[in-house]
Amino acid sequence: MRMWPSGGDEVRPSLQWDMPGYGVPVDEPIPEPIPRAQRDIESTWITIDGENGEPSSFAQISDLRAEAAERERQEWGGDPMPQLERFQSGKDIARMDRPLAEAVVRMNVPTLRRLAFWAAVQAYEYAGLADRDWVRPALNAMHVGQQLPEPFGNRTTAFEHLHEEEFGAGTDNVQLEVKVEIVDRSPQPESNPFDHGNIHVPSYALNAIFDALESDPLTAAVNALGTAAVTFGKDIRMLFARARVEFDLED
View 1: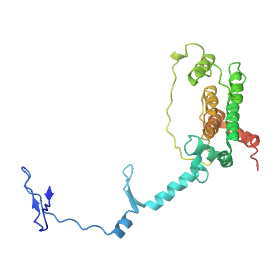
View 2: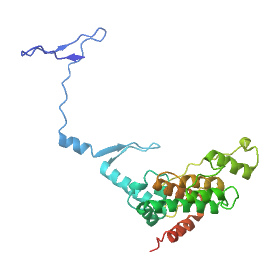
View 3: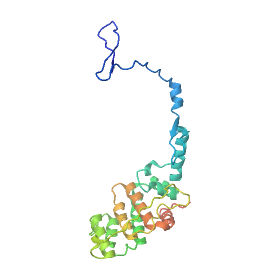
View 4: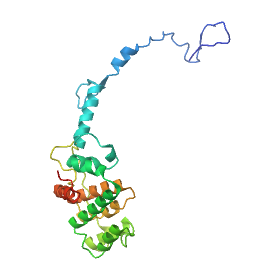
């Protein structure tokens, strides 16, 4: 430790402590500060560590930022949409159907709510739920703003009822096989982020009615549309085409 004591107007010499067991530290000069212009130049470059034995490389930060911005544009199908950034499916909807996403963020509250209800019905019809005796009253209640009847008091009871109907009693002991696959999530021109493969469609669609009743209209619309999109999966173009017609979005 180096100390510079000062007790008055007269500057006293600095002292170096003799640290027991360590001695007096080497009196090394303080390095000259790097001129700001040079620091600015150095700060525009970054070292990128090589992978799998590859040597490190250098890149300009501005180039990396430009590449990141371009990847972001690809993921959004255009400029990012701040209104949809907080939604899990917002970016995917925008990339798959940019005009539809732009229309959604321009909708007023009544139209957003109508979109949410419409998307929930589409999901239920596609999944074969809409005509079931215990489901129809819930859809009717949703449209008129009434409390959902049982078993739609909450998601848990609704799912329990569905799974008992689909898989029979004693589903608590059913062993599910979970497969984990690591894939490249970089957006491809023809990729469909809503096609999740072999899923139990009714189970996924069941969420839509709860999404549609979210208190925030934009949240309700985007989440219900996203749930319906995964429900349709490989048939996503059909859902978005119907939305264009239903909400008069055709050019």
